[in-house]
Image: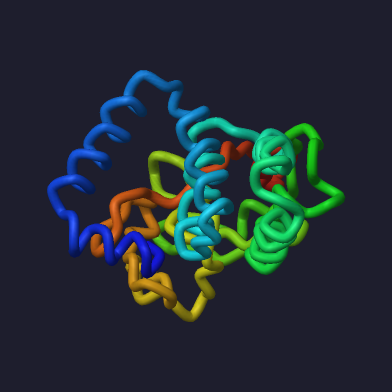
Length: 208
């Protein structure tokens, strides 16, 4: 939060608690996607970088497309002003989310080749790169699961060296994941994004 909000929480705790409760209750009637889009715009308006990085991926998880997020920010231009729009886009570019890259914006999801399926050993986690995206792949008797290498908290790219056994730890805020299931097992509360996969002519593909 900003210094001003921290001051109000400290000096007027009852009023601020009532206000935050009001926001929480009114938000329940909104579609999750709309609620997340409003939250993203709010983070731009207050120029809260940590919050912007945190809620941008949540908006994607709630079903908002990159184009809808961009349009929502631009639609708020009269209220926010150009300086805040540029501030948000600079952070977005620094986050380097594949879906927001100029060549991908507005594109339909498509299948990406990850390589020969035979190189994905059973009972092990395999690190792959495909079309500018890094992934962790786990294969067992039940099949194959493909996970995004980006932490769902603030889309920090988790490097291969962060994998110890089956435990994957984000270097930024120490969220920990089970690379076999994608579930968050420590610190955080959201799983890794899982991509649809298929085997075709001996090649493993993932769709995003």
